[in-house]
Length: 344
Figure 1 (cartoon, rainbow, N blue to C red):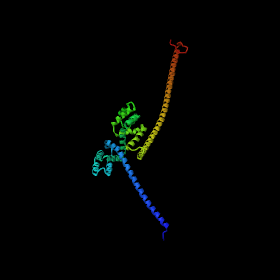
Figure 2: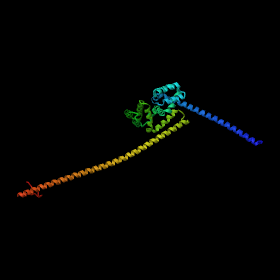
Figure 3: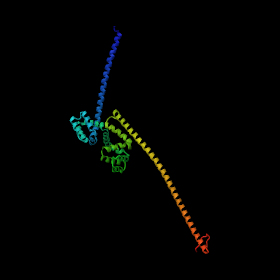
Figure 4: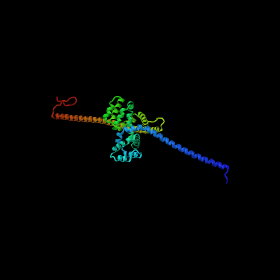
């Protein structure tokens, strides 16, 4: 069966369409690969921008890291997988008897890796010790914004009171802060106290600003996130995502605080009702006491009346007996108007 011209034309069109689709698919694939490489390059460049600030945090907190990091073996294993530790060095560090010794050897080993090693350690600490890293960031940031805190914090006594309640400062240090006149003088005294303590107390101070200075805390936390990443505040999507996540955390904290406030209000209302009942019962007891005193007075008056009546009756009996005795003996008996014997 011979093909018509129309069939040949259709076949050619189908063939050209298939070739065009294949070329377009390959082109799109190349574009996607280029975009992925570009995103990876941009991410790497952004990480390099972050590294300068993050390595400062690691270097300035080496003592705290040695003291508080617990997941040293996991961190060493990840560094081994990343090629930042050799097999021999990994075995040496893991064989150390305590976490402090392992962390000291790990920091010493990474000192030769430069900026890349410190940044890798920071990322692994974020993964394995997130709470510790957050405490370190807060502790460092408190000193970065020291002057702003001195000028802005007004509820210094409330912060100091909460720190005393949580055992972050001693009673003597609390009075050392509160005895100063004015908020700035108290904040200077607060930083004098914080310099005598470590990471835990500074982190506690920063977190307590959320309760005592919520607006200031929001502003500081936003600036802290920007400073930690050191990127464009308007154009970088990663920072906005982090800020949104942090904002949700703050909203969650605010809801928790509101819930605690509501529970405190309920407890206060309950205590108020109990106080009213106690006052009412106290009034009832007082009334019963007054009634009891009145009853006792009446009892005393009745006893006095009974005793008086008894004495009067005895006196009358005695007088009557004397009258009869005198009459029986034949003596004239003078009497007075009340018919009472007179011995005059």
